[in-house]
Image (tube, rainbow, N blue to C red):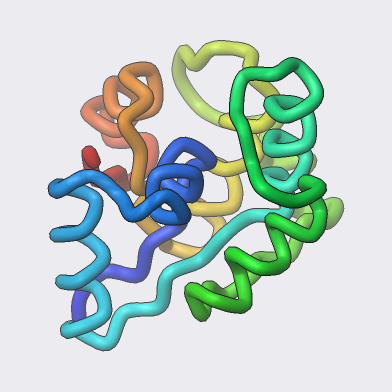
Length: 136
């Protein structure tokens, strides 16, 4: 079995749009290895904000889009409760202040998941040993 994954919001958007080659490779390897692929509910919040600001175009309202992506992709939805939220405030080392990224990282750390992302700050944070990450 390969490493279980947690998709960063950028990876969710790419996957829903058909993905980039590297992301497709990562997801195929996870599927073939029997690894679970997770999504955080904070991604729904990010999608809503991105749509509101006109930074992404999606064919349906954000909440419906999110639920359709989860159902169609067979993603496991992580909990988002007090454990994840407090852990996001207690991350070791230097990390930017983006609350959604902090919550995604905290969720990955609590569950032993690798974050699938292209976010350079998360990848740099991973290189310091604070979280597992896979570049896409």
